[in-house]
Image 1 (cartoon, chains in turn blue, cyan):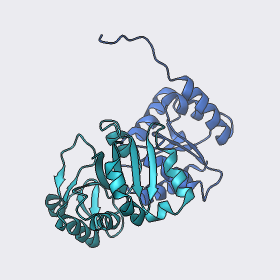
Image 2 (cartoon, rainbow over the protein chains, first blue to last red):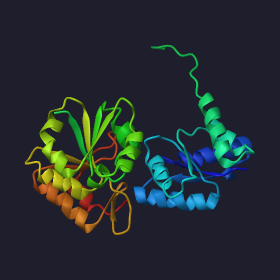
Image 3 (tube, one colour):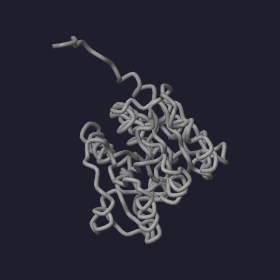
Image 4 (cartoon, rainbow over the protein chains, first blue to last red):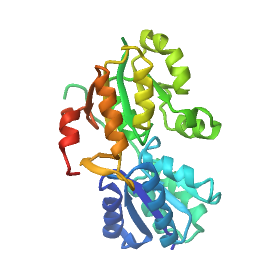
Length: 127
Length: 163
């Protein structure tokens, strides 16, 4: 099973781990990291520690412009093999956790699945 | 003037700036004043990557920002001027000859040597002095991480000891 770090705002990362566990029993694929109360250097340090813990070089983040994403992109300078995926959602993380491919390939497939999960159904203005 | 915010934030460009303030204030431009970032193409590209297409971003040294301050203030685009530390903002205010009247403390997070004031504001003794120096120049200094929270006056920030 590929493993990864989820780094996000507030309690989102822990919530996504919990949801992956509920749906597929694979919450253990991820280590959750929150940026709450942390400066950029501390986010980067905690990310480095979390990556060492999971063993695979993949980070999922929420906002493309967020501090977690910036910290992960900084780490790519010292870890050129690190994959950073932004815009994480539950479908994406399930695809990753259930994959039997390598972490980098699993991340590529997960992005395709996660992107395909975003859709808009119905709704009317003023309703 | 179209500068909506002069903000100190050690995360520089991030979610609170781009989305938290950017959307309600309809921000069109970010001017990041940081000597180190302005000198590094790699750093500039890193921050540029996070900015939405409809928002422009400029990277200036303190000296360049002061030289361009009239133009920055006169520009019609709704703008956030951003520094990553107190000292950079103090230099900017000191050189502005009264043209900067308010400063927002958006986030100075926990790190070694900083003591807690608010949940998102931790300060070293030097940073406390720097903020007081900014205020002593006639500038209104308040802490406010996101627009929906009330601004906290500097005197209250400095009197607080809880994060």
